[in-house]
Length: 135
Image 1: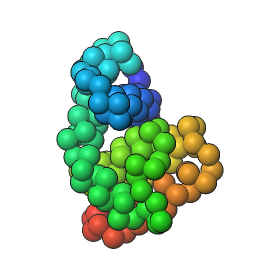
Image 2 (image 1 turned 180 degrees about the horizontal axis):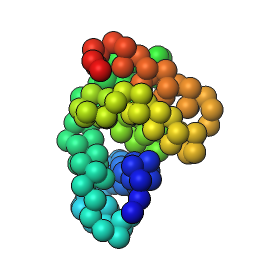
Image 3 (image 1 turned 90 degrees about the vertical axis):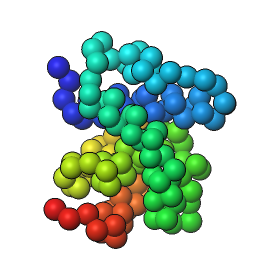
Image 4 (image 1 turned 45 degrees about the vertical axis):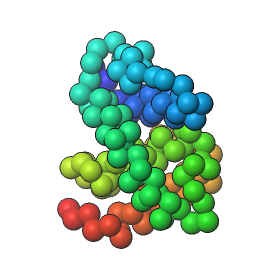
């Protein structure tokens, strides 16, 4: 059984694929992409992937509001997936804010460089402090 951190990493990989397909206007099946990454169905991964796609416009708008002199579509697809998961968990789930931010930063440390990690951390921190997430 995979832990939540590992499942978030799988969700990030699926979203990365989704963004590539969207960018090239290629049809895709989300369930098939998830199945390629997981041996068994996992509600946590399904929820993250499907809801990030469902709320992508709102997530992008939120990201662009807080990314200083930057735009979410200029990020690499991996970084966009990490930031989107972080924003989704901060704004749409009961995941404690510190966990949502920390999980995104840990993924970023693994897949991005230090500058990007700092930028994602700052962006998620601003969203947390400015969007009224009470805990």
